[in-house]
Picture 1 (cartoon, helix red, strand yellow):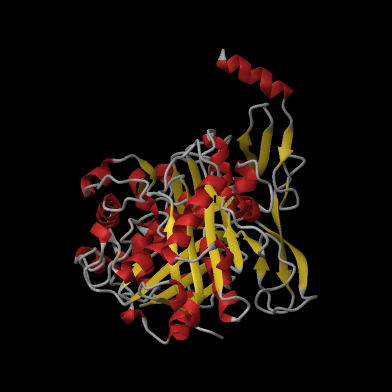
Picture 2: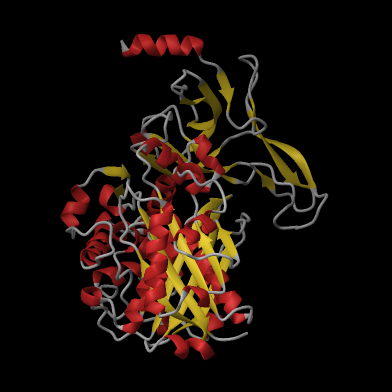
Length: 386
Length: 151
């Protein structure tokens, strides 16, 4: 297998763009990544395109990747359409990396593009719940997060203030991010004064609907210098796992932990080597659980991480410098690639006002999605190194 | 006006079963509802909804159909102050550890949200979970704290 590097990333701002379609959003992200990588359209050998709810909410019912890429001027090459719920973006990235690693092509593109806003909120809400067949019985992801957090709070003696602190941190980061959907920093008090969506979750702790696209271009390390003079960002691991069945009485390793430790092994590093991370906090307090599952702190220390500011922009392990899902926004399939774009910018030192202060060399993204039986449908961990 | 309209719609609506094959709906008052799951004859694990391959034994031919009482305890729950279109709001959702072993997701009915606790005993309650704009009523499985009447 060949070493793979990211040479270009690009994304649209995330937000509500009723007047823009998937093609328009996708083409913007593709061209920003192409310009960042300094490649030409004809250099791209294969493309993976992730989208989840296009068939339900847009006029495009299939081959969405081809519809979007032809709008960007990309014809003829193989296009692989990817649907993997919220982890679709990272799944597409993995496909692009494998094409290059295997020697099948030198340059590959991964795009995640999504539109949640369609002018009919009820229709959008149903589409968002469609990551699981249980939606027809009334299952809601916000309820699932609330259930897990309720148990976790009881076990750890956590307070809602801890959750609000995560939101205060992430909305501050988001306020510095020109790509973020929400750019208003929130105080702990403002978060706790917002209405209760599902105890213990308040409105400002939750991600909401969003439109947007994000793109990455990867290539074989031996050809990278042909295109770019920017620091090369190595893909040290991009591991994808699916959920397991929780057998009563047997220890259950959380899917994120299973994915993360597979990725650490592949990259030849440990969690202590990670300098910056973007994690899948569809409800911001879930970030605390992820600190432990990703091995960023020993089990039981998550509250201390947020209390001591260790994961702030100025901390020793900044988490969600982009603002995370609740502040940057969460257009399902675009999220994984937005996380990768953010880590690339952070590792290159190009993140502007939200640049982390610890001169990062290793970054991680965690991108989980869907709900199958009793576990996430999928979880992808990507480790990038400068 | 709204209530009148609802009444007319109700008269025109149909009763639709959501999740046919997941539960037995009593046809008379003295019959009890139950859940339709499956069981692995090799290791004894019970599943709801039905599985065709046991995730522990991982081979074909070990599974047979099984009925579950629908009794269990609340493992964790959430009160969502909104709901998907047509569902009751607030929507009370829970994970239940069923007596026979499986941990299952379900809606909770028949009690005030602030009465709920982790560890509370629940039983199966078949009833209306959703109503659409045409007045169709959707019937499915849910759970209620034991000893409460169905609201």
